[in-house]
Picture 1 (cartoon, rainbow, N blue to C red):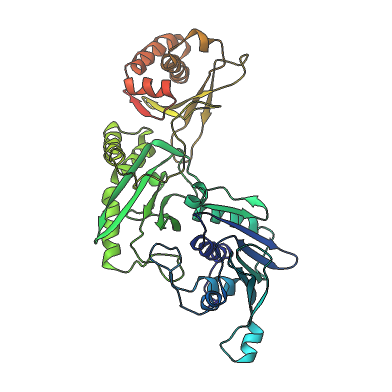
Picture 2: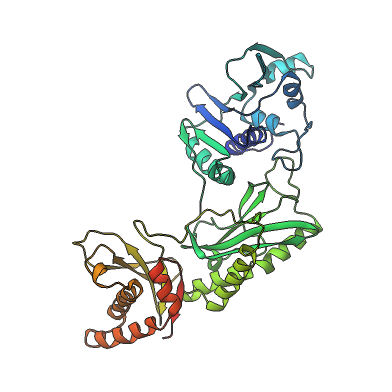
Length: 446
């Protein structure tokens, strides 16, 4: 069982799964600790704990009383997780109403020597109110383990951490839920039925394409991430390196290690076709951005229709659970608004610099596989901010000035600036986005 192929982070995730299933009053605190010098790793929780019989059952292979809504299913998680981390482990557990806590001890050498399918379970006076502690003596603990645990646990359990269900820490440091750097205007929710099974989720576009393959869909079961960066329903391609999202598959089966879904089925093939068709507007938008630097307004309209359809319903149990940037009040800086002026790509953002700084700054940003972008930042603290009440107008002026400087020789600067400014002011969606700190992508004819 220990030769499951689990990474250290995957093994720890299995133990966190058990803690989540044992949570009391909808919340659980899990502390992950390890010591490189002494070679151990420990996962402690303040869940409901186990009595002696429940602990004995937890040590039986394949025995599980968990239901369909639980994260654990197969009665293998504790054994495979602890066994993959090391050849010796202890499980200490106590119920809140109990007087004693129970300790099960496994040592591979002793187990093999005895030749019996038995493990010692002893008791002692309770030393904590409730919960379970699994400690494994392991040679798989290494100095850089923290980064791997933080990244994987923050992604796998991001919904639970974000919603306050799970309070998770590694060696005393809180784990933050992973998030996406999204263009919120591109996010499209979806839902449907595939092979008689309910499916829902969302897809959207990263503000910057991922050059490391960290894009694609997260596959989710009961709000726990099972797989990440899956190119499900489409083939990987640099033009699609902005596409991210989540696919919630609560009614599809996983393998017994919960490292993937069962894929070699007719139902899964039907799912792939359904996903390919459903997220096509997002795929098209990503391709469009890769080739032209702007989000086609027809594609935007399809996304908005889907958002309105799902968000406009009275029942809210299909609400999106993505973590990313949102549209709201400006704090230190706003979201980018992207504009294509002929062959030129620009992005505008409001910032709060010193009042003595320039009213705008322009920087050229090189992007691998894409055209360079002129990043225009307008300083809200500058005195012009008080003199020009229409922020959309001011932003359009700064964009037109940046575009004219880049495209025109000095003697034609004023003329081109006027032409570009007139074109920008004729775009109501652009003016609205610039004035409200929203995210938009608008093309101006060449």
